[in-house]
Amino acid sequence: MSQTLYLECYSGISGDMTVAALLDLGADQSVLETALKSLPVTGFDIVISRVKKAGLDVCDFHVKLDQDHENHDHDMAYLHGDHHHHHSDEHGHAHDDASELQHHEQLQKKTYSHANRGLLEIVAIIRQAAITDHAKELAIRIFSIIADAEAKAHGVEREQVHFHEVGAVDSIVDIVAVAVCLDNLNIREVIVPELYEGRGFVRCQHGIIPIPVPAVTHIAASHGLNLHLTSTEGELITPTGAAIVAAIKTGDQLPKQFTIEKTGMGAGKRTYDRPSLLRAMLITDKTKNSGGIFKLESNIDDCGGEILGFVMDRLFAAGARDVHYTPVYMKKNRPGYLLNVICKKDAIEELEQIIFEETTTIGIRRIQMESTGLRRTVKRILTSLGEAQVKVCELESGKRIYPEYASVAELCQKHRMAYQDAYHIIKKECEAAEGISQRTLAELNRFELPLTLGPDYN
Ligand SMILES: O=C([S-])c1cc(C(=O)S)c[n+]([C@@H]2O[C@H](COP(=O)(O)O)[C@@H](O)[C@H]2O)c1
Ligand code: NI
Image (cartoon, rainbow, N blue to C red):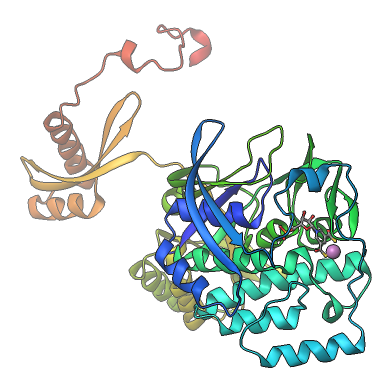
């Protein structure tokens, strides 16, 4: 069964935090390790461990790079210190013709080592990995979102974007790992209400850039992400984190009522004034699974009574909770009927097919509704007239018994009695069998009205 993931981003989000949170939620570590070994990329190793964050036991996913591939991603002095930039070149992102040629040569190779990759090379790397098509498609989607944001930030075409930090080995590993873990957990719905972000400036290979960094603002703008700015000094949302959310988010509203099946916590590497944590939860939407009901509606002015009677029977037989018609005056003053069908979500498809097949309608409206129901049990109780089927409903003030129509009608026929008489006997005897005693007037007085009614209450 597919699951709903809720990402709680109170300390922002990055690639490694997401992988760690998903592993903590139960993504298969050996599946991930096999997937990452199949990447045609050298110079890295992964370490999965437990660390403490604000005293909490949290999963950590670390991509260990060899010396040739090391960057400053987790070096707070480099990111936020005022020492001089390590790299003298503030390189742009556009390819010239020569580097374009070099790219295409490299696409032919089976392994890739340099850090300044373009989207085409990264896609080629992902395609060669031994991972599912769904995971490949997801990883490519995340990188494409980053490529579009980088293109906007640096004023170049998407194909000319040359990734630096975000195209380095650790980013490829993080993004492929996120895709493999989500696929492994069979997650199809993802709710991310908001992303908390810090403020100030951060150093990257181009120089010192404002927070949220441009790649993040472009991703947030193009994909409707809700940002929540805080007074924390520093970058809480990385471009990779924002792109992951943009690629997988299916909603930003948590259901009104849900249960938590599992929680996972992933550690971030950077230290700020708040613990660097990403909390992920697998949740079940209780409004969908229990009270979630729908009304199907259709106005019909050109369909005979026999057909409407017949379709009602078919709808009930196919699982409709209720079916009824309301007489209406439609356009051009035509008398017609409004067909109302109440049903559960999983019955919608079949019921709509029946309505289209049987009636002349060419459109059905669908409305999701909320409902409240009393707890009820259907019981068969032995009475002096025979066995009767009743519904026993529970209210705060006590139980109520409702004899079922078909059962009362059967006993009426058997004893040649009037319906009301049989109903009365069955109800009384079933109430006694269920221990429902006759209540006094004081017990029944729920509106706190005077017990002796005055002359105004005629
Ligand atoms: O590498 C590039 S081009 C780059 C661009 C930007 C822009 O916002 S533009 C920002 N950064 C910084 O790189 C690190 C790593 O990001 P990951 O997404 O790979 O974790 C981060 O601090 C970015 O702000 C790089
Ligand atoms: Ni950039």
